[in-house]
Amino acid sequence: MEERKASSQWGSRLGFMVAALGSALGLGSLWRFPYIAAENGGGLFVLVYLIFIVLLGVPLMAAEMAIGRSSQSSPVRAYGTLATKHKRAWQSIGALGVITGVLILSYYSVVAGWSLDYFRLSLTGGLPTSNDIDAFKGVFGELLKSPGTLLFWHVVVMLCTAWVVGRGVKGGIEQVTEWLMAILFLILIVLLGYSMTLPTFIDSVKFVFGFHAEDFTSESVLEAAGHAFFTLSLGMGAMLTYGSYLDKRSGVLSTAVLVSVMDTVASLVACLVVFPVTLNGGITELKEGGPGLVFNTLPLSAQALPFGGVWISVVFALLFVAALASTVSLLEVPVSVLIDSFGLARRKATALAAGVITLLGTPAALSWTPGFFSDGMTKIFGKSWFDLVDSLSANWFLSLGALGTCLFIAFAMDRKQLAAEFVRNHEGGRKLFQLWFLTTTVVSPIIIVVVFLKTLNVF
Ligand code: PHE
Image (cartoon, rainbow, N blue to C red; front, top):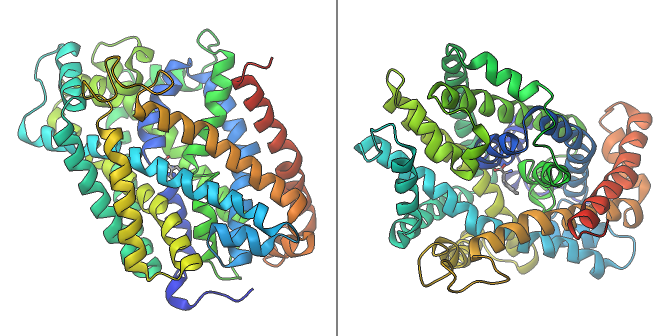
């Protein structure tokens, strides 16, 4: 397979790693992980999640990157060109990935918009100053019921994302994510340093790493598996697309390990910032926070701290920065397909994909507006549009895409060509390749199928 031209390749291996990390590290790690870890009892959940990162995340990320690099093409084409037979059928994995990416971005961008609105509120004194959780919940509820505000921020997020993607791989995605990640880690380290000074830090460490099984249910196992895919941007072709911009010299396995480790560290750090601050504010039941943990509970507790207002602004700036590097990778998937398979110019492809996704995000933004999708009005399968798209794409389609990729590795791709992707870079040679192959083609699919059957209540 011919390499892509230099302008459509990463400028350096570091640039690729940072971009992949930017994709992974987003709202999943900073907003979602702390509250699901709290809901599922902390320690034991974290352990199961870590096991899934090792058994599902790392092998699958290496698989996607290897498919991308080996084919030097966007998802739909990649599965087609690499399949030894039934090319068209295998292409459907890529197509499913595009649909999943489009769906995820349509509501992810709305959530990223929440952080922008909270950032604005924190700067303009719009957040409550009382110690009353209901006042904070009121602000959140108010936001969800303001379609104009939600749509405004959704459009802002989509415009920022399209601006980066439109500039291309090296000059846009790579350059901007390098900046975003540098800012993100800086903010995260400062916040961690700050939360370490709080008396509740030790209790939080005990909660995150201690073993308490009370709140850990069989649902928790599913939650952990689904989140492993989501947080590492797997199952929809983002890592495949980024891998396709990689030259043939750089290794994929080491990148997959590094990105997974960094994403996991950031998720744990997020807990060690959110929990101590929250507990310090006198809230003892972390699990009650739910999705509002970072939006309600954290600001309530943080306001009591010296310079509390400043820290709150910093937290929401952090959320937005993290989200943006992820939205960029989500948009790049359909854009790369429009360029590769339909011959569109990058700018046109970006405008088209971003336009469609902005429209698709509209019902997501209206999900809480009475009369649209909430309050018993229009519901689909008993769910609001937002919840439906979220559970369909993040829980089902990502796992399905991941399973498809495992099967592709097992049955469709030429083994020699695949091995060359690993052995060429002397990444531990044959033995390591065989271990990876076994995990990807046997262990991961079994876990995914068991998770599926369990979700469907088959046993
Ligand atoms: N990994 C991102 C996060 O944790 C979300 C994402 C999912 C990005 C799928 C790209 C693809 O926020």
